[in-house]
Length: 221
Image (cartoon, rainbow, N blue to C red; front, side, top):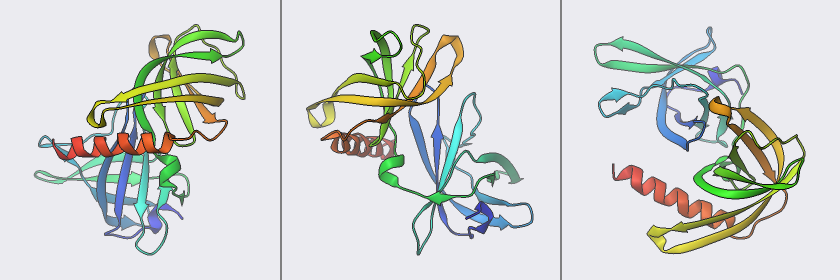
């Protein structure tokens, strides 16, 4: 499905992927479709009496459309431009160069963690201090310094330990991942993405608890 094949009134969710930070999520809906220009318009998101902008270094944006009689559709790496329609009236101009794909909510959700840990792996098989950027049901991402060099296909091991104060529960997981993605950042930092090498019992419960707490906090703002 192309993005211009969506229809007005369809609910959409923006997933804002920010380097070294969590994945932010915002809800909106389509107001208009322009078939000739291959784009859609969506309601602008207002935060603190200001229109939310999607600008920033290294930011990528994904969009999920909630189709009424079918599975949700994911559009990766969309283009978003803020348009002013009138006085205090704005919308988003959205385009996507790629076709949408069926969306698997369980696999796509990435939970921000931001905790330090020790990674074992890489060419030297030594221990390295890293930051667990985020975790999903199928993988995880690490932020590293210049002392870490990894190649696609290399296996690493980390220990994820997290105490969730809201439910008074400690979580501990041994995660083994195969490196599949590399993103170089400023100041010598690098984000590596990994695909989990095996099923991790209890991980989905941990992710669910983190997501529920995040939603409650957002509603309370």
